[in-house]
Image 1 (cartoon, rainbow, N blue to C red):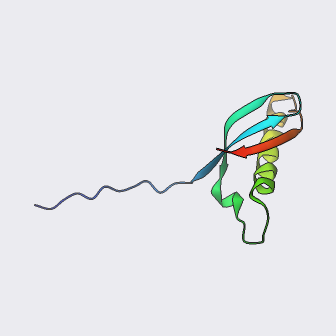
Image 2 (tube, rainbow, N blue to C red):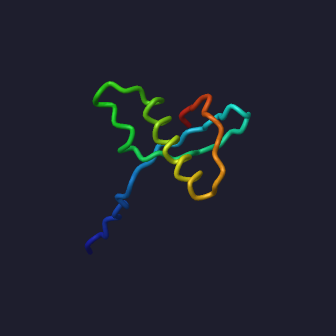
Length: 77
């Protein structure tokens, strides 16, 4: 009998971060696509994640009409 091989889904992979804002808010498990965290040019992972999360926050602000405070720190989960 032939066995069925289990196929893993190949989709986008994400890295999660906790984000701390200057007003004391914390957002947990913010997902950033791994392809945006390419460190081939020597960029720091935290800087790349901050840029991606700020872009997400700006997009959310355009849709909702309310802006988030500045990011104080980011930590990888």
